[in-house]
Length: 181
Ligand code: ADP
Image (cartoon, rainbow, N blue to C red; front, side):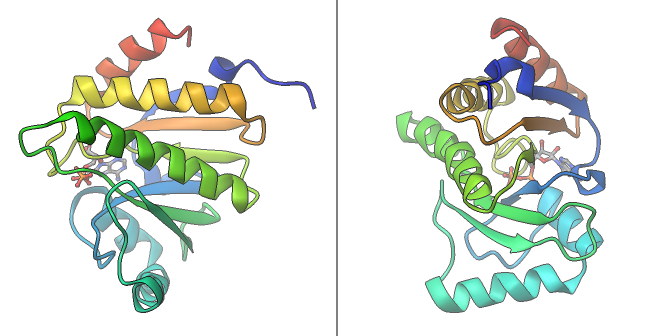
């Protein structure tokens, strides 16, 4: 297979990630994996109890999910095949390790997607809700990390950034224009 140009594999949309028919949607979860508000609440509400049940099994096996790491479950009633749950950093005043942790969320989610044969993956704006990561900075981390990953990996054919709010959409649009999307 010819190597796609990384940027042509990135798409930006506004909307609700639970509606997407892609191989994997990413959930901005918390480390307990037991559900919360925001996008996590929306995913569990729309996907049904099966997803939470699998999260409980993962917790029983490995005792939660650390910041920057990711786990995968099926997607219950959602149109996607899998949900990849990743735990973003809580901003809490910032610091260098926050950037690295947020970047790890994107890398580990894409790695898990590849390991499970996924060719398309959709991301919400991880950490930019209750976790308080500044949206402009988060957009930079998301775009830089994903485009770098795609330039080295040809298994993922499509990455969709799904923005629920206008502010994130505008920051992402600006950042993507910078890398040629
Ligand atoms: P975090 O705890 O990582 O900050 P949140 O769920 O509070 O997670 O917010 C992450 C982002 O998800 C926010 O930008 C929020 O607007 C967005 N979001 C909330 N609901 C949805 C949804 N249904 N689809 C896509 N994004 C969503």
